[in-house]
Length: 177
Image (tube, rainbow, N blue to C red; front, side):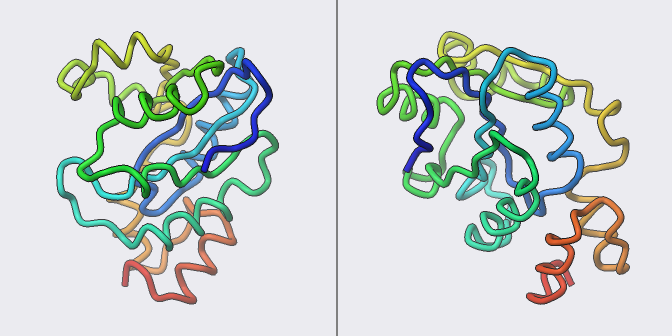
């Protein structure tokens, strides 16, 4: 269920819908590894969106994440949220990880845009107790890389914000058409 990380590893959690995973996500993971004292990044697609937004199937999104992050060392795709009750919130995921691996030092890898409403998240205070917040300027990483706009661009056959393997998978399975 969880990667076989070393004892007391510093793990950055990068969660999201990843619908689809795009270069902004990849740059966020790479930035976290390069600029913060973490050993690994765990990419965790949500199984179902907490706010009931419709999502492409979990299996498609997991596979696309595996493709999108395959070139990055110390990045693992983790499917733990598929095994948790829905709707699931970040706090429940962190509590489950902490229960399974209490030795890990957790942090959340987040784009700055999420901080505007972070205090309204379920269990925001407890999240801060379980994980350090590593905030990155989203606009500096890849301007215009938002999943909603990228899905719209894919409909127009614009794949400029996507890894080549993700692009091929989307085309093969006719996703976002």
